[in-house]
Amino acid sequence: MNTDKYKHIEDHQLLQHFYADKNNEWLGILLQRYTLLLLGVCMKYLKNEEEAKDGVQQVFLKAITELHKYKVDYFKSWLYMIAKNHCLMKLRDKGKHPVEINEQHFLTPDETEATIKHLEKDATLTNMEKALQLLNEEQLQCIQLFYLEKKSYQDIAGQTGYPLLKVKSHIQNGKRNLKIMLERLQHNEQ
Amino acid sequence: MSNDLKDILSNSNKDIDNQQLMDYLSNQLSKADSHAMEKDMVDDEFMNDAVEGLQKMEHPKDMQAFVEQLNNDLHKQIAKNKNRKEKRSLKEQPYTYVTIIIILILVVISFIVLKKHLDAKNAQPPANSKVTAISNLQ
Image 1 (cartoon, rainbow over the protein chains, first blue to last red):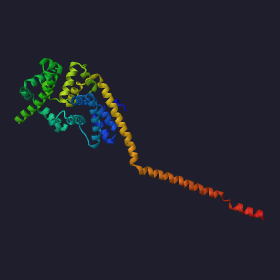
Image 2: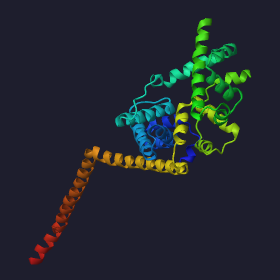
Image 3: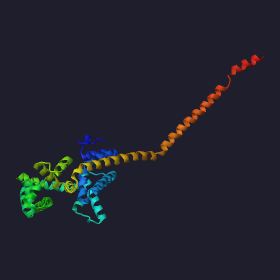
Image 4: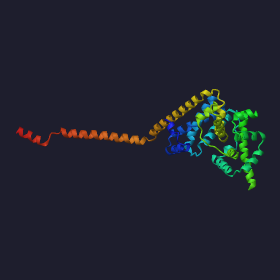
C-alpha cells in the first residue's frame, strides 16, 4: 500500500477508518509513522540494536491486538506507554532494571492536557517571575538559556559545563517544577 | 521577554517529522531549527526518549535501513494476517458451501433424470405408426 497518499490524514482519522472497517492496513499506515520513534525508545531502554528491532516488532503486534479490543483516543501517548511498558517488562524479565513506576503511568493524556491548559490559562507573568526565582541554580540557568536566550542543548552544555543529558534533565525538571510552583502560587492567591 | 516567559509553559504537540528528526541527529539542522526541535522534545517524552535512544545507536547510518525493514515486515505481517483471516472465514462458514454443493448436485441429478425420461419417451414409436403397420399386415 502506498502510504504517501495518506500523509494528509491525521492519526485520529486513520484510527476512525480502522474502527469503521477493522482493516489492519489503516493501522499499518499509522504505526509506520512512529517506527523511528519506537526504535529510539526501545534502543534507549534495551541498549542493543537487534533487541530494539525485535522490541519494535513486538510493540507493533501488541498495538494491533490491543486496538481490536478497545478504543484509543490519544494514539501517540498510548503507543508510547505500550512501548515503554514493553521495554520495562523486558528488563524486569532479564533482572537488569527495576520497573520504573512514576506518576506518569497513572496520568491519562486527558488529565495531563487538562492540567497544562488550566495552568496556561491562569498563569500570570508575575507568578512566573516569582516561580523562576524558586528554582535551583542549575535549573534556573538552563531554563533561562534555553527559553529566554533560545540556546540549543549543545550550546548550553558548552557554556555551563554541564553534560548534555544533565542540561536536558535540568530543563525538563525545571519546567515541571515551574508548573508545580505556579499552581501553588495561584492556589495561595485564591 | 514576556512572550518568552509565556513560552516556557506552552505545550507544543506537533507531529513528528522523521526526516527532520534524522537531520537533527546528524547535526544537519540550523541553530533555530535545532532549538525548535529541542523545545518540542521538552514537552514530548516520547520524542525525548526516542532521541536519547537513537543517539546511542552504534551505526547511525543504518537507522533508515532499519526503519524501512521494520516497515516492510509490518506490512508483510498485516498482509499475512489478512490472508489467514480470509481463509478462516471460509472455514467458519461451512454450511453455506455445503448448501451450494447440495443444490448443484440436485440440479445435476434432476437434469440426468429428466433427460432419461425424455429419451425413453422419444424411443417409444408413435401410436399412428402402429396402425399403419397393422394395416400393412392385413
